[in-house]
Length: 490
Image 1 (cartoon, one colour):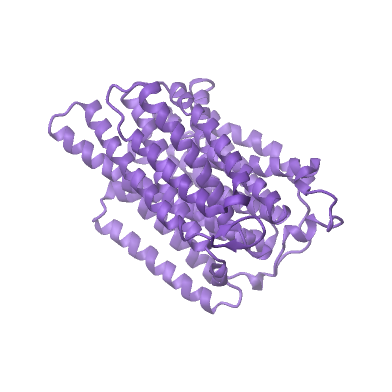
Image 2: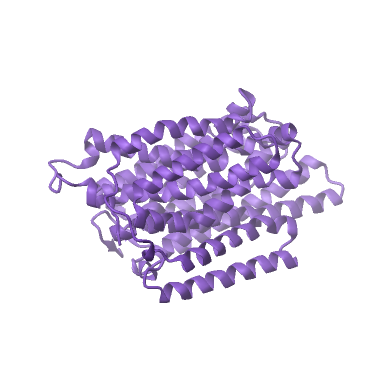
């Protein structure tokens, strides 16, 4: 049973005089959906600069501290597939509202946390809320705006906001941490959610019916969510436990077994959580894999450059955050330009060129010196990455949603975002191991700490650059959506 926003949002305007996006209601609807995306993407990065203050205030151990960002990533990626399918079956507005309430309440609890356990628990709940919100919002967007230039423009704005939020989150985290304190990186969410909820009820049409419980694939939900949770958990823990440790191997083996069992269940279930027929949409699988590999390299950049600026160059939290502001501008410009290029060139050239440009920027950043200067050593690479990042966001988001039936829009959105979250976890796990191993080797050879850290960061950033070249190669297999509802191969 499908509950499609397009079933309700276009009542009375089946032959509109002008595109919905050009109306005041259409503009407000897109603004609301982008605000939801901004809230979710910011949550993934806003706490990073506040971590030292959290550790000092709550007396958190280093091992516990890593779970403040990782807990959000764990449930965000683990529940994304389930959240997207629930949006298709139960109604997108219902799921969007539920996720917004969960994020608002869990953030409020986290802001008042007096212990590591409460803070980490709140972050776990935040991830669940985000896994409900994001696919619901993206599927509302793809079913509300018509296939073609209108949807490309909407997706371009959405993707640009997503890229901006990843960088703006670091800046906001620095401003709030040095200003009212680290708790406000969590307190801003309830305020934002209180503004979003009335707008959702005012602008998003209500869901007319709900699916029967018999339509839920309970076994698939358990197996799929369990497999994703275990996979992300194993990736997060691997750098500390060791890639060859029994615990890490057992984690990956368990995730593999659960995912294989999930696929077998989906083939046999009359109402699968993940209808495998969705992969018949041309280029969808390649678009998701491209997003996974690209995110692995790009998200790691924020992590290692933040450590470099604070631990080697001695930047304050607010200085570190401000360093990313030019990148925000570049992402916005690139996203706007690329959303207009899609109709002419298709998504494939945008994805491939964007990944190569981002790879070149990361390569330049991998040459950062111990006594680096922002203007000469960081800014040029950041600006090059920003143009590539904006292009990759727009191209992959459009390619992964093109040609998907309205009844599976939530599922397509969930697949894209789940692949990006798994990519983030994969990248941080691999690159952290590379950086730590190289830095530790240098420290044992009596190298100065700043030099050892910098050379470790250099190696991690270089590996990220290689990942983006791989993403460009895989991007050649993505569908080439032009905006007319068709994939072309030219």
